[in-house]
Image 1 (cartoon, one colour):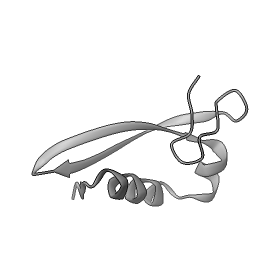
Image 2: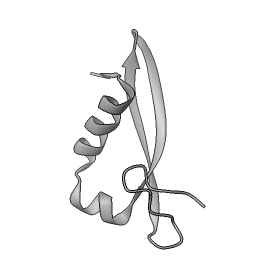
Image 3: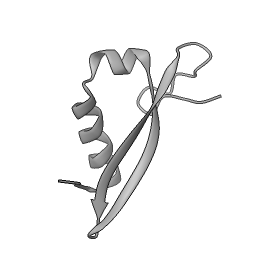
Length: 63
């Protein structure tokens, strides 16, 4: 059973999908794969999801 990164909804109740986020930490490339439910994915753009994850982990943007 997997859960949404944002709302903790399980995949049993709401289907979810994987999103791979890439960034930099201390000059090194980092990558994290998270799950996002269809509800959160519907009201957040992919750029918003990326910004929130990068902010939560304290990374810099990859660009």
